[in-house]
Length: 136
Image (tube, rainbow, N blue to C red; front, side, top):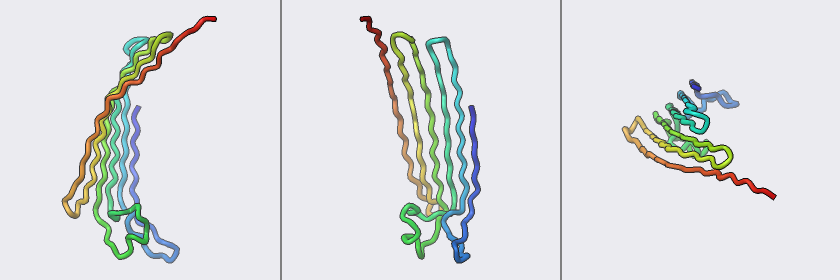
Protein backbone atom coordinates (compact mmCIF):
# COMPACT_ATOMS: atom_id res chain seq x y z
CA UNK A 1 0.00 0.00 0.00
CA UNK A 2 1.27 3.49 -0.78
CA UNK A 3 -0.08 6.98 -0.16
CA UNK A 4 1.24 10.44 -1.09
CA UNK A 5 -0.17 13.94 -0.78
CA UNK A 6 1.22 17.36 -1.69
CA UNK A 7 -0.30 20.68 -0.66
CA UNK A 8 0.85 24.10 -1.84
CA UNK A 9 -0.51 26.77 0.52
CA UNK A 10 -0.66 30.54 0.08
CA UNK A 11 -1.36 33.35 2.49
CA UNK A 12 -5.03 34.30 2.53
CA UNK A 13 -6.73 37.68 2.79
CA UNK A 14 -8.75 38.73 5.80
CA UNK A 15 -12.20 40.35 5.64
CA UNK A 16 -10.65 43.75 4.91
CA UNK A 17 -8.61 42.41 1.98
CA UNK A 18 -5.28 42.44 3.84
CA UNK A 19 -2.89 39.53 3.32
CA UNK A 20 -2.53 37.35 6.40
CA UNK A 21 1.09 36.19 6.61
CA UNK A 22 2.44 32.99 8.07
CA UNK A 23 0.55 30.41 5.99
CA UNK A 24 2.54 30.20 2.74
CA UNK A 25 4.33 26.88 2.33
CA UNK A 26 4.32 23.33 1.04
CA UNK A 27 3.35 20.16 2.78
CA UNK A 28 4.27 16.64 1.63
CA UNK A 29 3.24 13.41 3.28
CA UNK A 30 3.98 9.88 2.09
CA UNK A 31 3.34 6.44 3.54
CA UNK A 32 4.33 3.00 2.27
CA UNK A 33 3.49 -0.37 3.84
CA UNK A 34 4.37 -3.85 2.77
CA UNK A 35 3.32 -7.03 4.53
CA UNK A 36 4.02 -10.70 4.04
CA UNK A 37 2.09 -13.63 5.45
CA UNK A 38 4.93 -16.12 5.89
CA UNK A 39 2.46 -18.85 6.82
CA UNK A 40 -0.89 -19.08 8.63
CA UNK A 41 0.67 -18.15 11.96
CA UNK A 42 3.33 -15.56 11.04
CA UNK A 43 3.08 -12.13 9.43
CA UNK A 44 5.79 -9.48 8.94
CA UNK A 45 5.05 -5.85 8.07
CA UNK A 46 7.37 -2.95 7.21
CA UNK A 47 6.16 0.67 7.25
CA UNK A 48 7.78 3.93 6.15
CA UNK A 49 6.18 7.35 6.69
CA UNK A 50 7.54 10.82 5.96
CA UNK A 51 5.95 14.22 6.59
CA UNK A 52 7.59 17.49 5.53
CA UNK A 53 6.18 20.98 6.01
CA UNK A 54 8.23 23.95 4.80
CA UNK A 55 7.21 27.55 4.44
CA UNK A 56 7.22 31.13 5.60
CA UNK A 57 5.78 30.72 9.07
CA UNK A 58 5.85 32.53 12.38
CA UNK A 59 8.10 30.89 14.94
CA UNK A 60 5.25 30.57 17.46
CA UNK A 61 2.32 29.81 15.20
CA UNK A 62 0.37 28.21 18.02
CA UNK A 63 0.33 31.48 20.00
CA UNK A 64 -2.26 33.01 17.68
CA UNK A 65 -2.44 36.18 15.62
CA UNK A 66 -2.03 38.63 18.52
CA UNK A 67 1.41 37.25 19.44
CA UNK A 68 2.69 37.58 15.87
CA UNK A 69 1.69 41.22 15.27
CA UNK A 70 4.76 43.14 14.15
CA UNK A 71 6.90 40.01 13.84
CA UNK A 72 8.41 38.68 10.61
CA UNK A 73 7.82 35.23 9.18
CA UNK A 74 10.76 32.86 8.81
CA UNK A 75 11.65 30.01 6.47
CA UNK A 76 10.84 27.05 8.71
CA UNK A 77 11.03 23.35 7.87
CA UNK A 78 9.54 20.56 9.95
CA UNK A 79 10.24 16.93 9.04
CA UNK A 80 9.09 13.68 10.64
CA UNK A 81 10.35 10.32 9.37
CA UNK A 82 9.10 7.05 10.85
CA UNK A 83 10.06 3.43 10.29
CA UNK A 84 8.49 0.35 11.82
CA UNK A 85 8.93 -3.39 11.58
CA UNK A 86 6.21 -5.60 13.05
CA UNK A 87 5.91 -9.35 13.48
CA UNK A 88 2.68 -11.11 14.45
CA UNK A 89 2.48 -14.70 15.66
CA UNK A 90 -1.10 -15.96 15.83
CA UNK A 91 -1.53 -19.43 17.33
CA UNK A 92 -5.32 -19.07 17.07
CA UNK A 93 -6.66 -20.93 20.12
CA UNK A 94 -3.70 -20.28 22.41
CA UNK A 95 -1.94 -16.97 21.99
CA UNK A 96 -1.45 -13.97 19.75
CA UNK A 97 1.90 -12.20 20.03
CA UNK A 98 2.82 -8.94 18.31
CA UNK A 99 6.29 -7.43 18.46
CA UNK A 100 7.34 -4.21 16.80
CA UNK A 101 10.35 -1.96 16.51
CA UNK A 102 9.58 1.67 15.78
CA UNK A 103 11.84 4.64 15.12
CA UNK A 104 10.70 8.23 14.78
CA UNK A 105 13.06 11.04 13.70
CA UNK A 106 11.97 14.66 14.12
CA UNK A 107 13.66 17.77 12.75
CA UNK A 108 12.79 21.45 13.14
CA UNK A 109 14.87 23.88 11.05
CA UNK A 110 14.85 27.65 11.00
CA UNK A 111 16.59 28.10 7.65
CA UNK A 112 17.05 31.87 8.04
CA UNK A 113 19.25 31.27 11.10
CA UNK A 114 20.86 27.95 10.10
CA UNK A 115 19.59 26.40 13.33
CA UNK A 116 18.14 22.93 13.63
CA UNK A 117 16.73 20.79 16.39
CA UNK A 118 16.64 17.01 16.01
CA UNK A 119 15.39 14.13 18.08
CA UNK A 120 15.21 10.39 17.52
CA UNK A 121 12.97 8.00 19.42
CA UNK A 122 13.21 4.21 19.19
CA UNK A 123 10.66 1.88 20.77
CA UNK A 124 10.40 -1.89 21.09
CA UNK A 125 6.95 -3.07 22.02
CA UNK A 126 5.49 -6.46 22.82
CA UNK A 127 1.78 -7.19 22.92
CA UNK A 128 0.45 -10.55 24.11
CA UNK A 129 -3.13 -11.81 24.04
CA UNK A 130 -3.41 -15.15 25.75
CA UNK A 131 -6.60 -16.96 24.98
CA UNK A 132 -8.07 -19.38 27.40
CA UNK A 133 -10.89 -21.82 27.04
CA UNK A 134 -12.96 -23.00 29.93
CA UNK A 135 -15.34 -25.85 30.18
CA UNK A 136 -18.32 -26.04 32.47
